[in-house]
Length: 623
Image 1 (cartoon, helix red, strand yellow):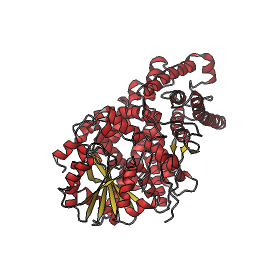
Image 2 (tube, helix red, strand yellow; image 1 turned 180 degrees about the horizontal axis):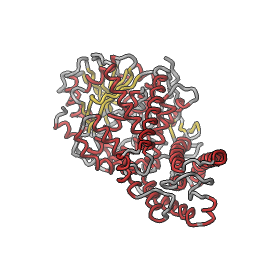
Image 3 (cartoon, one colour; image 1 turned 120 degrees about the vertical axis):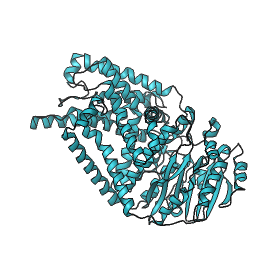
Image 4 (cartoon, one colour; image 1 turned 45 degrees about the vertical axis):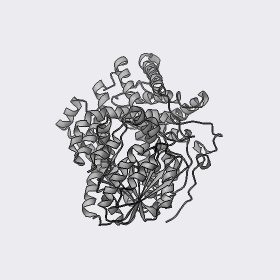
C-alpha cells in the first residue's frame, strides 16, 4: 500500500502554473477557450431547435411535406422518441456558429456537415419509399432515428478531422500479426451480442417491463439498449477465460523508469519514494531517470534530495531545455539502455507490486506495452467519480478490447514498453495531445500486443479544482482527434488494422455523441414541453435515462467485475460527473483552431506540417 504521507503530496490544490504547460493547448492546434463559448453554442442551439421544431409542427405546409414532423420525406412505420434529424441539423448550426474562424469559413463548415447528412437522409428515404412500394411495409421510424443519430455523430467527428487544425500524418509500421484473430473475435462477439439482445427483446421479460416503467431504458428498444453492454460483457468473459489458459511467466528484466517533470516539487519526492518501495520488491535492476523540463519551482533540487534516500535504484537527473512533455520523454528514451522501460508521470505513486506485476507480461512473446489501473488519492471533489471512470474505462472497457488484441491506447500515468518497439515507431509524438495513446497505438499496429493488467495499481493525481479538471479534459478529449489525424494510414483500404477500421471510428462517434449530450437534453425538454407530438414516446424520465441509464448499469458492472464494491456509493456522483464531462467534451471540440489553409506551413487539407509543429517525421518501417 502507498504510504499516507505520499498520498498527501497529491491531495493538494494546484495553482495554474503547476498544472498548465505548453502541452495544455499545443500551438497551431488549439487555443485556451473562453468560458462563454460553450454557453453561446447551447443558446444558439436552443433557439435554432425551437424554431425548427415549431416550423415542422405548426406550419401546415411543412406537415404536409414532412409527414413525420422531421426531415423525412416519406412515411415510416411507428413512432420516434425525438426528431433526431432536426436535432442533428440544429447542433450543426450551433457548433458552426462558434468555431474559431471567420464567418465565411463557419458557413462552409456548416455545409460540410449538412450536405453529407442531407444526402444520407435522402438516400435512406428513397430506399424506404422503394421498400414500401415493393412490400407494402415501411421501415421503422424509431430504428431510422437511431441510425440517423449515429451517422450524424460520425459525420461531425470526421468533419472536425478534415477542417480543424490537426497534426500532420506520419506513416508508422504496420504488421498483420494478430489482426485476423482480432477481427474474427470482434465479429463473433458482435454477432453473439446482437443475437442475445434480439432474444431478450422478443422474450417480453417482466424485468424489461419494470425497467421501462422507471424509464431506465430511456425509451430505446431493449435490443438496442443491450447491444453494446452485452458486447463488452462477453469480451470481458473471454478475457477471463484467456487469463486462465494463458499463463504469465515469472519475468523480471532490468528496467529503466523515465519521469518527465515540470514544476513538480510538491510531488516528486513522494513519487521517488513510492518507486523505491516498488523497486525493493522487484526482481530486476531498476534505473530511475528524472528529466527536468524547465521547472521553476525547485523540482530538480527536490528530486536530488529524494535520490539520496534510494537504495534499490540507480538514479539520474537529466535536463531537457525544449518545452513539452514529449521532448522530455524522448530525452529520457534516448538515455534508456535496458530492453524494457516505463514512463511515469511526476504525480503518480506506484503500488509496491506494480513493477513486478507489469513487467512480468513481457515474458510472453510480442508484448509491446503494458498498463495498469490508476486509483484516485482520495479526498478530492472528483476522486469518487474518477475511481468509477477508471474502473469502467481501464478495468472493464480496455480489458474487453484486450481480449480481441485491439486496445486503443494505454494512459501515460504509468505505462511500460518494449524499448525496441518504442524506438521502432519513432518514440513520443511532439506538439500534440495524446502522445501516450499515439505510441501505444503505433506499437500495437506494428505487430505487438498491448496489455492492461488491473492488478497492477498506482495512484495518480486527480484535479481538485474545476480549472484543473477543465484543462486536463480539454487535453484528453482533443487527443482522440490528434492521434487519429497523425495515424491516417490506418484507415487506408486494405490496411491490416482492426483499430483503424473498427475501434477508432467507434471512439470518434462516441466522443461526438458525448459532445452532443447537453444539446440532446435541452432538445428533448424543449420538444416535450413546447411541441408535444403524438408520434413521440418521450418523457422527461426517458430523456434522462437515455443519457444516464446505460452508463449507470455499465458502471455497476465494472465495479462488480473489479471487486471494488466501495465504489458503489459514488454512483450518484459519477452520473453527475458524466454530465460535467459531456460539457467539457463540447468545450474541447470548440477549443480546436481553424486557420486558413495557407497559414502555419499547412501541408494538407486541415493538417499542420511536421516542421511547423517541431516534430520529426517517422519513416515507414517493416518488421
